[in-house]
Image (cartoon, rainbow, N blue to C red):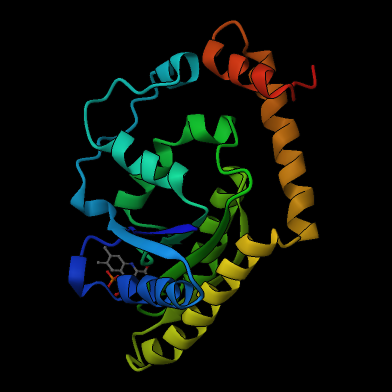
Length: 223
Ligand SMILES: Cc1cc2nc3c(=O)[nH]c(=O)nc-3n(C[C@H](O)[C@H](O)[C@H](O)COP(=O)(O)O)c2cc1C
């Protein structure tokens, strides 16, 4: 079982979000998973230009490291998505990666993958950013088993308490993957997402040829 941690902070080893992601991964390792943590900022990642070639052909024309990161994501059974709060949102680094995954969203590529969202912040915005990352994960087809967000401005020691919570989430993540645990509320949301993207791709079948073929192969086209 493979679990990948993705850190949106540009601060490398200094990143407090990285520490929290690592705590989730440590819990997962103890529960028997193989883990890897990547910093998005360590990769050459260009902005999505909205050209639509990925919808039509299933590949991106930009020459950079996206495919390498994307392959790691596709190879994983579990994902720990992390970012510090930057002006009430995720960092530009993580958003750049998310934008590059619009084709993955249309094709629901993380169907069957379990995930966790992690954030740190100075004073606030953590609930909103956890909710945003969990929504993105749901849009990709993934079930999120929880999230941990912590405000560190007034109490830097809060990170220590949060790492315990994070490690416990790592154990739950592994258990959820191992037992294909059900999350009925999210399963309803994911079913609606699948229906929505299936209909969207179908409506654009003449242009989004690759995505239409993908859904057709899955035999899940509703229209
Ligand atoms: C550009 C920038 C924007 C930030 N925006 C917010 C914010 O909107 N609210 C907040 O409480 N903290 C904000 N912070 C503080 C970070 O969220 C906080 O220091 C976080 O723990 C940094 O995580 P890292 O160590 O993983 O990079 C911001 C920091 C930077 C550099």
